[in-house]
Amino acid sequence: MRIYATANQKGGVGKTVDTINLGAALAEQGRRVLELDWDPQGHLTEAVGARPADPGGPSLARALLGQWSGELSELVQPVGENLYVIPTSDEMFLLEPQMYGRSGREYLLSRFLDTLKDVFDDIVIDCPPSLGALNDNALVATRQRPPGDEVQGKIVIPVQAEDSSIRALRLFLRQVSTLQDALGIQLDIAGLVVNLYDSRKGRITTSTLEAFQAHPLGVLAVFKDLKEVREAWRLQTTVFSYAPDSEIAAGFRALAARLDPDLTPVAAP
Ligand SMILES: Nc1ncnc2c1ncn2[C@@H]1O[C@H](COP(=O)(O)OP(=O)(O)OP(=O)(O)O)[C@@H](O)[C@H]1O
Ligand SMILES: [Mg+2]
Image 1 (spheres, helix red, strand yellow):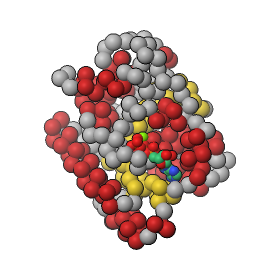
Image 2: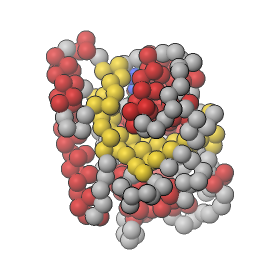
Image 3: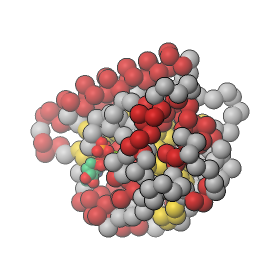
Image 4: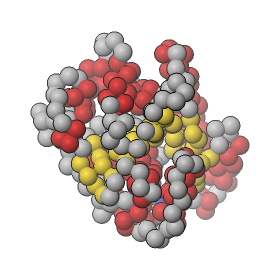
């Protein structure tokens, strides 16, 4: 099982769009994919047309806090072929403050996700725009495992081609190294995904893209600001069901293939 964390504390850079459509691209290739709405804002839940968990009912937040235990099927909703979602819940807002003070709090999510390794091939985590315990938990879930371990992970960093995104990236990378040092773990960053790219915005935009391309992390994909993304979001679906022949769907197929070289390439429909 591969775990991808789509993470950047900067808001509005395309984390949720990348999570939804990377997951859909992997599912199209026949992988059994779980998308995890790990942001209390619940944007992913809304954008894929899932129902938020009922207050006081089965939810991932309550499961992690030891307040609920039951069948996985009570937490997971199907949203497409091979594609499943764990939605947000009201309790997600309470999860982060309740994590502080617990020993081993950074591993709460990781321990849960590892139990799903016989159920899903890939898990894509939509992280919140903050550098707190939720974000740390998602990053830790992707940590390098001993050779031969069935679980592998990678961090994907969505960015936007603007100066503030470069400063935000520096801060994010500092958090990654702090976490590695504090916990004695290794985190594997797959690279950057540049979203909402619009070269008509001029030199600041194009030179920022060049700076990202020169960055040692490398750029995995550049996605233009495309109407199909917003239209699919409004219709609560992925760009794969809404516009399977679009440039953006092709781009996400290529991103999935870059992240997972073991995928058997299939022709676009
Ligand atoms: N390639 C794209 N083309 C057009 N619109 C896009 C594209 N990528 C993202 N968007 C839009 O930009 C907005 C921000 O994207 P998204 O919600 O994915 O960012 P985010 O990083 O998850 O935000 P937050 O930090 O609030 O969670 C959304 O309205 C989304 O539909
Ligand atoms: Mg988001």
